[in-house]
Image (tube, rainbow, N blue to C red):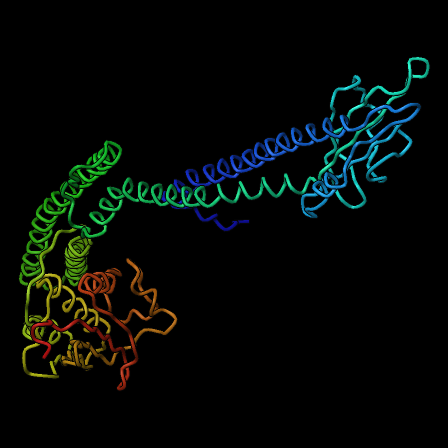
Length: 474
């Protein structure tokens, strides 16, 4: 089962993808690392503040007899608690499970924490629904006979450090975003600039006609593009050589085939004439010589059609010029009159009398009209009519060849343009299936359209529409 071929990305998109996508990933990674570093530095600042606060609070707790004296004025408490968004929580307990002062809900130190007396340690915890950062230290207390420990804890919300990190990241983010945008624009401009020689090469190739096989010249192009142009020029040179060789072969074949066939036809006619005089009672020999003459004539016609088909191919370098299609068609029709009279066909030309100027190749157009008339005469029965009709319709010239022969079935009208295809309704035709193929190829070279329809009076109507010469269209 044939699957749909995946659509390939253009070279520009691939370069932009491979350049911008990794850059975006790296910038996002850098932003994440910057946020983590900012958060770590903010936590470090808060830890230092908490350490100083816990040490200051510890100094306010003094032994007094069998207990403790807390020298913690109300004014100091108000300073710690006055900012609800940056409030400092504290607690003093001794022994650590016995609350003395501060916030009773202060989270306890983790069991895994073991710190020497008087050394500050830090941990994270929850105070109600609030995430806090806690600085704590154990202090010696009691008497030598009954030593005890006092726990001093100071905590602040962790939201402050996160908010500080976000603000720093936002302050860094705007310049970072501008830098990313500027870099992307520079990358896009660089890719476009780098691919401009390829666009120039593409336009150079697109603007060429199939007959233009001259080398491609690209000035100031990078080495890679020059290498590509050199490879294309090498291919064009090989194609040019093959086309030239084919043209020489066609010319040689035309000369080598036409001359002996023409001589053979002349000799056959001469022998047939002499037989008619010397041996009138040999009808079989005359009939066989007539068949030989017919075969030779068909061979000559086949050679001429093959050469005409080769000239009509796009590879053949042909120069078009302004010409009068009406005059050309009438000349071809006049040349076909003797054959029509010999076949008992009434051949006529109708339509507009004036000139019908078009741009084309006179030799190919003569071959086109001759093939249409030859087909019509071949397939029209004796006593029939063949009409060449010419007219100007707007910006087009209409050329029609009408006959009252057997016509072509609708089912075969597409296939009759194939080379060497001969329809079922052959009638008197002696063709080889190249006439309409030549007509279609010549019409395509002239930008014309061709169609086959039923002739209103019976038979076939071949219609050809060619562009009128623009200078004469008004």
